[in-house]
Image (cartoon, rainbow, N blue to C red; front, top):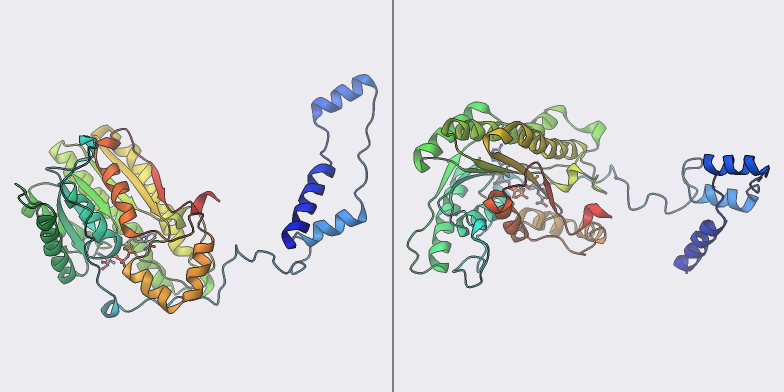
Amino acid sequence: MIKTSLLRQVSRASTTAVRPPTSALLTRQATRGIRITPPARSEEDKDKHDEYSTAGKPGAFEHEGQFSRTDKRIRVEYPEEENLPSSAPVQGRGGFHFRRTLSSFSLEGRSAIVTGGARGLGLVMSQACVVSGSDVAIVDLNKEEGEKQAKLLEETFRKENPGATRVPKVTAHYCDVSKPESVNQALAEIIEAHGKVDHLVTSAGFTENFDAIEYPHDRIQKLWGVNVDGTYLWACAVAKHLMERKAAGSVVMIGSMSGAIVNVPQPQAPYNAAKAAVRHLASSLAVEWAHAGIRVNCISPGYMLTALTKKILDDNPELAQKWTSLIPQGKMGRPEDLMGAVTFLLSDAAGYVTGADLRVDGGYTVT
Ligand SMILES: NC(=O)c1ccc[n+]([C@@H]2O[C@H](COP(=O)([O-])OP(=O)(O)OC[C@H]3O[C@@H](n4cnc5c(N)ncnc54)[C@H](O)[C@@H]3O)[C@@H](O)[C@H]2O)c1
């Protein structure tokens, strides 16, 4: 019913809308000595404009902005670190390559660092590197979890590749990515353990929701420290190492679709700004380091169903409905959906791709 009357309005608007004459038309009319006076808008049209616009009369239309505004009452409670569920390596994604693909997608013989690799998206992307033949150094605040997952990744690889002549080496290292001295110390440890670094994936990051005006300043600084400084510090440290080795390499920064759009209904302005910064850092450093053969790209995931987001949505089911209603594919992403994207961007298959932002969001940002 609503749809039919809306369609009628739209169709009437498109057939009766009066456009101001263009200058070309005005010149032609003046030459021919013709004057056209646009018909005055009827009272009914004026009322409709007010009804469908909040510019003059906020609150006139009961659905105004309904699906595109933040709601300051929404504050998602993130579980405390000790209550966070652990992730597990995905099964059946690796194994022998029974199907042919481009060899340029392989990361065989490479060595990659994945920050935030102990859990969630970072862990799955670490696994993508291992499956593709790369050694991996997991970098995380939670070293114990990183060590557990490093063992599991090697075990899963062995199980899925019986008789493999080489099993990628996976190590775990403590680091607070927001602190320069911690980054330098972890990098030195990794070079000691792996001999070199070819790739970096920056996945350490977090989000939280506060109404902007009430956001405690120290928390904003912490959020920007991990998401922005952490990305910057690791990218510079690895680029410096690559330049010293005179070796080519590639970096993938994990941004978010929040760097391009504003999520609703949960307010999270500082996170959105942080992810916009990450996206533009990737472009800026891509230009700055192109001369050294270092490519820098960004992946901007949409809503991904990790162990952490699953817990949040289990506690707030109405949020899941709102989120999925805005995704053209109608579902949240699985962390595994990033495996191909990260492998491609790190590998030689993406040799001419730098400064790009690859959105993996089920179409969220194109509507
Ligand atoms: N999950 C999503 O829906 C989603 C969507 C878009 C973007 N992202 C981004 O992807 C990245 C990973 O998100 P996730 O969902 O896997 O989160 P997660 O919380 O499951 O994992 C993040 C990991 O980073 C580590 N970490 C946090 N602070 C750190 C620090 N200071 N130093 C070192 N390690 C630290 C944590 O210990 C954890 O292991 C984040 O940057 C996030 O903003 C996530």
